[in-house]
Image (cartoon, rainbow, N blue to C red; front, side):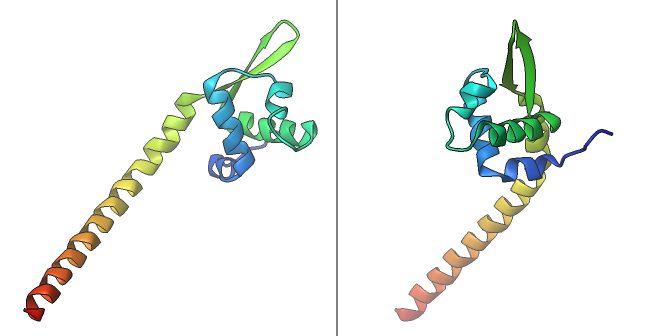
Length: 112
C-alpha cells in the first residue's frame, strides 16, 4: 500500500524545510544531511522519506551511495498553487494601506 503524504504538511515542519534548504545547494547523502542536525540519523531518515514521498526530493544512486536532490518542479507546483492567494492578499493589504493613508490625510487636514 502506497502512503500519500500531503506536501503542505511536509513543508510545515522546520526540520524538513531546513533539509530542503541544504539539498537545494547540492545533492547530499543521508549521512551528510544528518550531520547538520542534532537529531538522530533515524529521525532525519524519516524526514527524508517524507520529503521523497512528496516528491520534494529526488534520490539517485552513485555506486553504493544514495544522494538526495531538491526537486524544483514539485516546488514550482506548490508556488503556482499559492500564487493566486498571494495576489489576493497582496491586493487586500495594498487596499488597506491606501485606506490608512487616506484616513491619516483626513485626520491631518481636520487638525488644521
